[in-house]
Amino acid sequence: MCPSAGSEKTTRGWVIPIGGAEEKANNPEILQRFCDLCGGSDARILVIPTASELEDTGPLYVELFESMGARSVFIPVDEREDCFKDEIQAKLKRSTGIFITGGNQLRLSTILGGTPVAQLIRHLNADGVHVAGTSAGAAIISEHMIAGGRSGPTPLEDGVTMAPGLGLTNKIIIDQHFRQRDRIGRLLTALSYNPFASGIGIDEDTAAFIGPDRVFEVVGSGAVTVVDPSELRHSSMHDARHRDAITLIGLKLHILASGARYDTNTRTAYSE
Amino acid sequence: MCPSAGSEKTTRGWVIPIGGAEEKANNPEILQRFCDLCGGSDARILVIPTASELEDTGPLYVELFESMGARSVFIPVDEREDCFKDEIQAKLKRSTGIFITGGNQLRLSTILGGTPVAQLIRHLNADGVHVAGTSAGAAIISEHMIAGGRSGPTPLEDGVTMAPGLGLTNKIIIDQHFRQRDRIGRLLTALSYNPFASGIGIDEDTAAFIGPDRVFEVVGSGAVTVVDPSELRHSSMHDARHRDAITLIGLKLHILASGARYDTNTRTAYSE
Image (tube, rainbow over the protein chains, first blue to last red):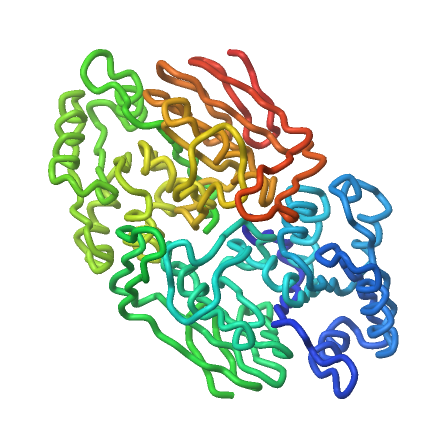
């Protein structure tokens, strides 16, 4: 799906993919900034722990956001039928921010995909509710999601598995744990099929805060790697045999650390 | 990408995925109906033979459409740089219909993807120009494209390769040569990741004529298989190991032959 149109009267909410393993104890800069954006002490943050199979993931984030002064609840969504319950949808509608935890992004797409909850998240974001996701929660944000793939620097035929995501943005394809898990090859593979979007690789403890104007700012201790294929001259993906390395000619690359910005509409990077 | 918004004054063009191997000599019903829709003797049909590496694919379709009374040209687009040429875009803007030939859909996505030609096809379709595609040309039509996969009836982990398509519709995922190449397993795999769209498997010499109201009618000698996952209760894709068979509970299935219709908005099938 693509981003919801929203009403003309409201400003879209922010969209915040986080690269996983964000600092939670000492100076939790990313989570604090998300909490402030959602209203600080007036924030009502709804946590979706569906990607995780650990029972304490939801309560952990609720406790963190409450320690920052926000009100927070989590919704226990483990099966598709949960997404059709009125009380779950009512809780979503009362939130000023939605936080999607890490785990397995295929749990998010198989359990939320095509349900009223997925639709509501798109509508609420279009109407001003901020949506952050870490790790698997970051992967699900875009229209075309990286569901899995191979580590290493070289793009390979069969190097990535793509699947439909939530569709809060269709300007970028997101990967996470980027430097820590050596994922530039699979991000390049994702772009090699159809180079219409910018590739965004987010390191751990790092986030891209994407504003309503679709410009993002980097926050955190690592970097965001941007691969812009808008001037790509050639991709060999259509000729590739099984596990071949892929030729890609004419990519642009930006490495953006804290404070740097990138305009996903014009594909322009700014150092501050 | 998702369908272009278009202006409010014009009716959207039709979108016509064809399952490949459509009849060309005796009673070419599908091509004739497309030609009539584009204006009959006033039709100006632009052929995009990029998916094919055979030099006579473009001229063959031009000759066919001209034998039906239309004017027709093909655009030789073999590299991404061709998609930035003014004369190519000018030819597109003069067309009443666009026909995308078969071949390899990854040639379409890697060569057209993210270029002004891809953008223009979306805008023209939103403004009333009809777009048909056969085989690879049908696959590229949807937002989420099946780029390849395994034959057979059972959905399997690693059973399909997905990639971003042109995005003329985001309500369906299309597969073609459906019965002839035994592709229901890979269509089900495509839906198992994120069951938000209906799966549409189109037999050879068969087409889904999707109107501006997003209802399609089946035309041709085979059938269109519709898999509707809107009431899916469970997909095991998130738990699957390499090459596992996937559990999918609660799918709806319709087999639609010539004259039957399907509403991709409401997911309702009609026998005539």
